[in-house]
Figure 1 (cartoon, rainbow, N blue to C red):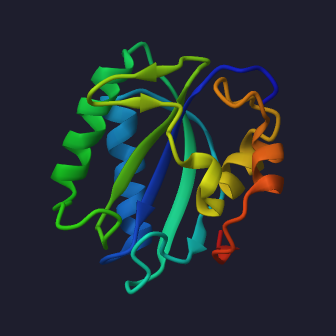
Figure 2: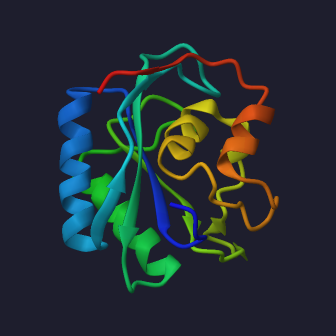
Length: 163
């Protein structure tokens, strides 16, 4: 993918049957947000932020949708809730986490939503699957490609491809 279009979501799970949860999340996103056009491999990753918890499975997907960013946010929060997510602590263990990374070239900073995701450039578990499927996508705020952001990222967390 070399153009700068696409709605990029990061999926993450570190509780329960993680692969099954990611599959259910993809199915529900297809139903409630839009068609998944591209998906990265699944990666097992070290926890970030709160490190005393199980490893995550992470995946980046690209969705085709006519929905506005705030509507996508509402839908992914509903999906998280339906899959059993309970918010106890920031960056804590969770059944599912779905983050909106990019919405085409949009730059948005509202009370409920910031796009591009404000910490994606700091996280290898986001940048590795992102660079896999969209190495030339340019972050509209930082003006760097996914590949450049990955090469400059100081995060040393383990990210291992599992599928």
